Image 1 (cartoon, rainbow, N blue to C red):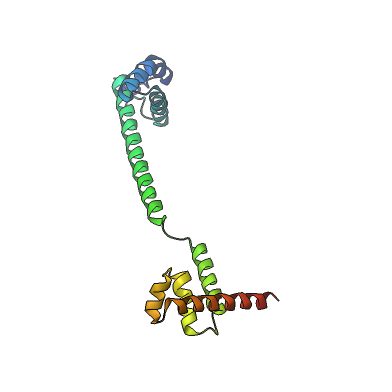
Image 2: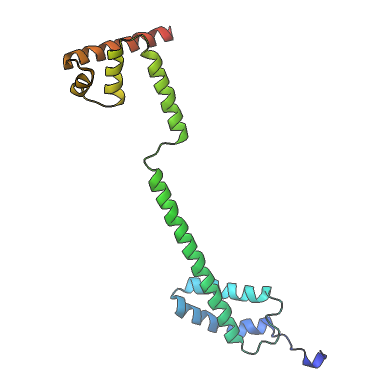
Length: 175
């Protein structure tokens, strides 16, 4: 291609000084936010600057600027949509995990249960069942009595027996 046929580049400085104000006003009206409009004007000129061939043969600078800016607005809206979807999913995940314990908490609970099982060794099976039912399963004394086929008074005796046994086992363990 002869040198005379090669389109001359549109000077970036000229493009910026002649059209910056117009593009800012256009975006501010579209977005109804001067801060976002200013950011997008900046992004538009950065994108044009990054494109080597953007300034070659430019005949309609405002059309080119508005098209570039419109695409940036669409990109920004898509990013915002993805971010909102991510945040909504994150909120659902947090909500779903709200009632669940962390692995560390589960480990501590299991260790405590092992200690309780160790402390309850040597107890009469009904005393052990009464203790587990009352303190771990949160059953009432009448419910435990019904389950074991004994009187509520006997449940109280078994609970007292289990507590004394645990206390003595802990005292021996410390000594």
